[in-house]
Image (cartoon, rainbow, N blue to C red; front, side, top):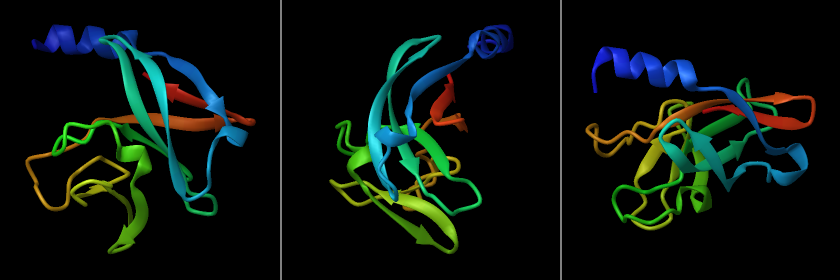
Length: 124
């Protein structure tokens, strides 16, 4: 991908509604479809009420198992950073940036996500 193509994709990203606060499960994940410039994608959305950052959105696809299961993972904390453990092979991914803690060469895609009132909005 050229720099111009990357810039064009970034420019076409827009904020869109994803769900409502009532659709979320505190300290757990839910899966959702989101429209991206590359087509639809599955997102794992995590809600951590009371934390400095309450919402996280990362790729739902587990690159180690090939299954779409990240939203079903166990949410926890490693060295003060929120993580999710894949429910299949148990790799840990930082919610902030999608980095796999067991394999530095693997990073899940992340999205900006926020509340607007009771609606959850995502930039995709």
